[in-house]
Image (cartoon, rainbow, N blue to C red; front, top):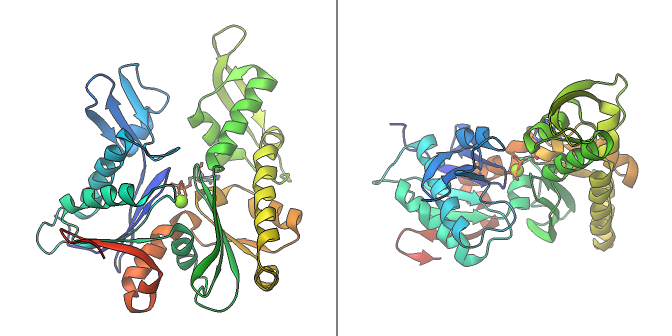
Length: 344
Ligand SMILES: Nc1ncnc2c1ncn2[C@@H]1O[C@H](COP(=O)(O)OP(=O)(O)O)[C@@H](O)[C@H]1O
Ligand SMILES: [Mg+2]
């Protein structure tokens, strides 16, 4: 069994990342779960379930339980999935259990948050504290958020983008939008269907995006052979798609993203907006890895943009750093819950 480690957890809509105190990122898995349609028994969790997306027979449901609201039945699934990941990463420690600092999607209300943190008790976690996503992302990106200076962080996840303006360690503006990496995948699916009459799945679309996708023109165009179902014949068909086509396909969600960042900047108090124009916008989250994204936003809004180091790890790292530098950073925590003692 692995040794006891305090944990920082990024419970994302697409991926769960776990940071071990003084160890760095120790675990990453897709937030996907596969269930038997009739009995609801869990068949696979994480990587194994992800492989079944779009490929499972009708008797199996494969879902991302955190995507698009977590009401009802999905809440128990999220708890089960999280518990499974924590035990896989850190073992089970009923005595002397680990402490956890976790970042959860903003749509969760207090009751849902409690239910999810309670599920960790079974791994032995003796205390779970919550930190907001943008604050964790900013700490993970090494932004000096405690200063009297405005910083903007844009975390692009799978199905949510969090845009925040932070000053003196708190969010002055904190907006969550239902746009994310998935929106870019969906735009590729729509484009390929419209232009080539070819139906492709989300896994193929994501592969197109990560391998040849860019929101800035590429100097040397790339191409990829993709297979889908021809909508005219109903049969499988392979065709070649170019990066120029993908560029065209990605324009709609890109413009939408630029528009919302613009509107947040417009609503930012003048002094803080001036600070942001000075220091620029920082991007985190897996969606920030989309080729050309920060350049495209920078050109459109005439403001410096940069991508944090290892952007997809920022939130988990921010949670972990808060654990490691608890004296300095615990003021950023939202709430905490100890085993059997309710909310503090
Ligand atoms: N190299 C890449 N290029 C473009 N998009 C990427 C890349 N790597 C990951 N992504 C996208 O990042 C998103 C997941 O980001 P992540 O921060 O893990 O999500 P969440 O925080 O919602 O769990 C997905 O939409 C995925 O396609
Ligand atoms: Mg993320």
